[in-house]
Structures are given as C-alpha cells and as structure tokens.
Image 1 (tube, rainbow, N blue to C red):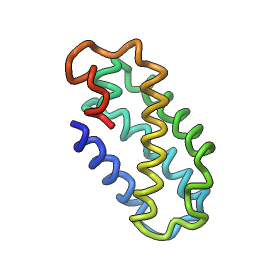
Image 2: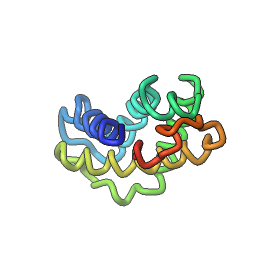
Image 3: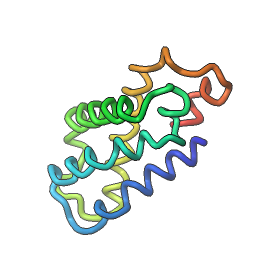
Image 4: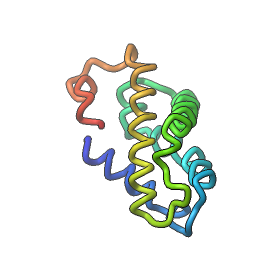
Length: 123
C-alpha cells in the first residue's frame, strides 16, 4: 500500500496541469492546493480507509494541511518549477508534510486493523 500511495502521489504531481508548462512558485502552490485534497482523500487511500473521515472533512483537513506545509516549506520549492522532476520533488515533500499533519490530527480515529496500525505502509 505504501508504494501505491507514493506512486499515486508522484503521478498526481507530474500529471497535467502540473506538467503543462513552467510555473512560478506561487502558481505551483495554487495548483497543489487545488489538486491535493481530492487526491489525498480518495476513498481508497489511507485517510478515508483508516481514519474514518468523510470526504468533505478529509478534504478540508487536507487543504488546511497543504497550505500550512506550503508556507512552512516555501523555500524548498524552486522560484520557477521548470519540469516534472522539480514538481515531483516539491510535491512529495509537501504531500508528506501534509500527510503527517492529517495523521496527527486524526490519529485517535485510526481503525485497529493491522494494515491501518502500521503507518509506515502508507508513507
């Protein structure tokens, strides 16, 4: 599941519209906030499966976490994101940060299944 999640994050981050052209840091950040919540809160991913979050609750938390992480890690995003590799690198960093924030916020809701208890499977 871990590999699937990280592969899916990478696919999101290099998929259109994030691949279409060069983006300024602010443009890239706006696109990330626009795309990350729906992706991270897919019903087949950890936050919905293991933290028992409704779609709207998950998307609100993911948006908030993404904005916070984008602010905290802004200097690690190139001033101009020029290619898919830069986009994937920055996106993975921000997605990992946001995921930790969501996990921390809702950890008390985590299901007791072996798969859900092993958080390393989802990172």
